[in-house]
Figure 1 (cartoon, rainbow, N blue to C red):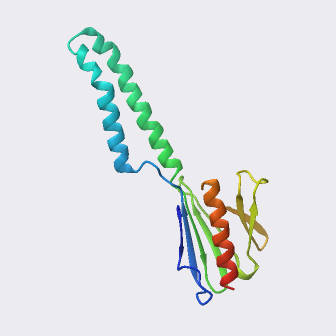
Figure 2 (figure 1 turned 30 degrees about the vertical axis):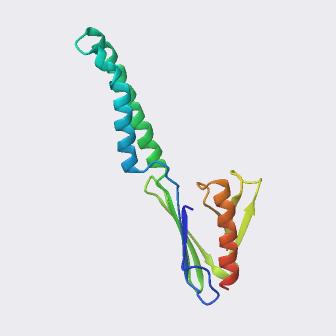
Figure 3 (figure 1 turned 180 degrees about the vertical axis):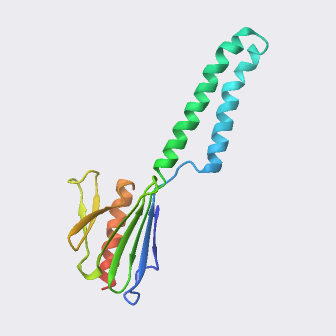
Amino acid sequence: MPYELSPPPSPTVQNWRLSLWAYRSLLRKDFVIFMGGTAALVLLPMLAIVGSGALWVILPFVSLMFAGLWWALHISYRRGEVLEELSVDSTTARLTRYNPSGEILEWQANRYWVTVHFHPKGGPVENYITLRGGDREVELGTFLDVAERAALYDALRRAFRERR
């Protein structure tokens, strides 16, 4: 799961932290392997035309394909660099979201008034989770998978209930 609740739920522990991050199926080292494998698969058949004029006709298109693939994967990585941290102490619940653009968004409320809401169908994504406290309602984990948001909701509900 792309989130971590620490320390584990316990009625005796009042301070806890939840960290959420976007799941990455292609790690940086795997990116290098993928690009190398793609290069080998594309350039291997081109060995047959080395020394002919056809190579110079095809080479710009192959280069453009590699540049486009690299650019698309790079943009995907940048958009996935989101981190949300919910820290709860004896009086305050504080949510901090670090966006890929470098923008930092913060929300805080009295922990005893914070409620966790689950919207199976009504939100912008399926199994939408929000935290309500004070005068605002904030979303949590919209970048997670549908099943992960359902599991997160259960963990959050348990954490807030058991640690009151």
